[in-house]
Length: 404
Image (cartoon, rainbow, N blue to C red):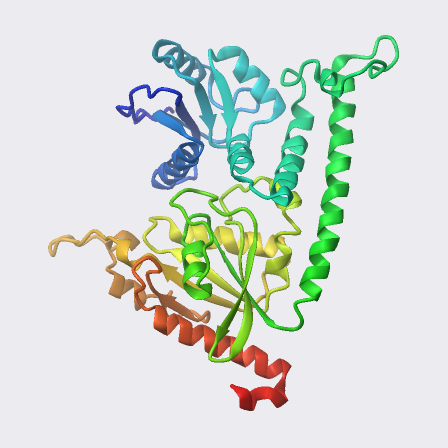
C-alpha cells in the first residue's frame, strides 16, 4: 500500500543550486513518525550538501524491492514528477545496491544518489587536512569499486602515457577495476604511514587522562569543546562540521587532561567511512572517559543515543565509562496535554522537568542537562568533569593526590 502523504515544498529554483526529491520505503513494522524523522535527517543531509529538497515520496512495503527499491508504479510516478518539474537529483534514504542503482538510473531523467553516496559527498567537500582527505578518498573508492559499471568510462586516460591497457580483448571495466584497486592500495599505504605517526604522537602525550567527546552529528560537541578548551574548533549548524579529530590540553585547577572532539556518528554510517576513519576513532578507543553529548531538543534523541551506543560497541569502545550530557535544553519544546485528554502521555508530552525525573535521570550513567550555546549549567558540568578526571588520575597516580 502506498503512502499518499507525499509532501511537496514550495522551493523555487535557486541559481547554481540543485533541486531534489527524497525517496524512502516505510517498512511494515516501522512507525510512520520515525520514517518521517529519517526523511527529515535525509533532507538535512541534502541541505548540508547545498541541495534543496522539494518533495518527498514514501511507500509502505515489507522491505525495499531488490530490483528498483520501490514498486514499479511508484518509480514511474517519481520519474514523471522529476521530468515535469525538471528535478536535478533523486535521493534514496538507503544504500542502493549496484543493480538497484543501474535499474533506477534507466528510469530516471536525472541523477540518482543514495544515502551513502550523499554522506560521502559531504565528507569529500568538508575534508580539510591531508589526513581527512586521504580517509575520504579511500572510502569513496571502496564505495565505487563494485559500482564501476556505468559510473566510470575511460578511467585509464587519467594515467596518461601509452601501454596502460592490458592485452587484446581486455574490457574497459576490468582495466578500471585494476586502476581503482591500485589507488585503494596506495591510499591504504598512505593511511598506515600517517597512522604510525599519529600513534607516536599519542604515545608522546604521556599518561594524561584522556576524555573524548562523542555523539550523533550536530549535537554541539564542537561548541562544548570550545567552551572547555577555550579553542576555536569549527562549529556550524550542519551535519559533519567536524571531520578531523581535534585534541586539546585542558587544565582544571592544576589538573591537566586531554580533550578530543571526534567526528559525529549518524544512522546508517557507511561501513567504508567507519573503516577508513578507524584511526581517527582510536582517540575514542583509547579514551579513559567518554562524554556522550545528546541533542535533547531533537524528537528522536533516544534513537540517536542508541545509534551512538551501537557504533561505540562496533569500534570496541562500548565498555568505556560514559558521562551523558543532554545539550540544547534552551531549544527543548513539548506539547502540553489537555486536562481532559486521557490518552497516555508520550515523550513529546513531557516537560523538561518531567524528562529530568524520568528514567534518563535515574539511569546508572551519570548525566547532566545543559546548553552549551547559552552556557546554562556549564559550571556544574565543569565540576562534574573535574571530579571524574580527578578520580581516574588518582587511580593512576595515587601518590600525587595531594596536588589536587
